[in-house]
Length: 250
Image 1 (cartoon, rainbow, N blue to C red):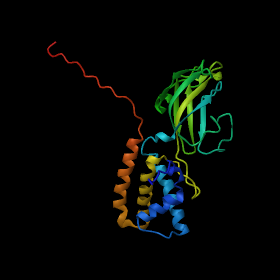
Image 2 (cartoon, rainbow, N blue to C red):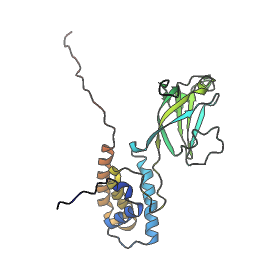
Image 3 (cartoon, rainbow, N blue to C red):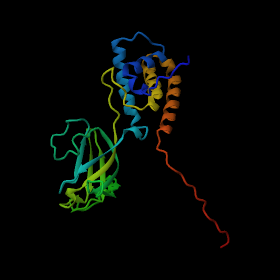
Image 4 (cartoon, one colour):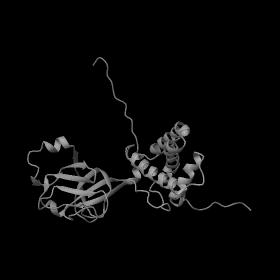
């Protein structure tokens, strides 16, 4: 009788934090873990996830939401954690937090499938926004400026929404932070493509504290697996190459 397959593809979600830690320690030759070693590994895993934020865009952490525009209010704030905000007036929206950056924004009119219409907004830098003479000029927003601060991320629109714009939305695509590792029984906030480099990366971090002689070896493996995962994580699109015409002596 032929063997059957499992019929499941959930290993990345059933592979809990304690199993990630156990696998990483085994790769550097350490078993029978103590409570301190578990705590140390969890801390290293959280640090590594934060370091991944410097590696480029994690596509699985891209999400979208609408900001309800308010007349006369230019700045809208996303706090680092839920409940950090003290005023619901400046929060946009309150159930979205941990926003690392805003990638794209549109001015959206209509909130139904038949009436919705989006107009792209231009993302500007601090220097450009600073040079605007009257930042409180009211009108239909055409630009937005993002500040990435320690405890929050703010989005400032220009012109400041007027009474007409106040009934409309700003639709944004934003980058979320990778969720923290809290309980050892938690699933990991990473897709299956990043499970191999997550384990090899944690082994590299742990080797620095426990087996320095393995650090260089584990680093090479980690960087190789992470690079493959980042390449695979890209968004595939069609590419068209058009040759340039050249007419000599004309």
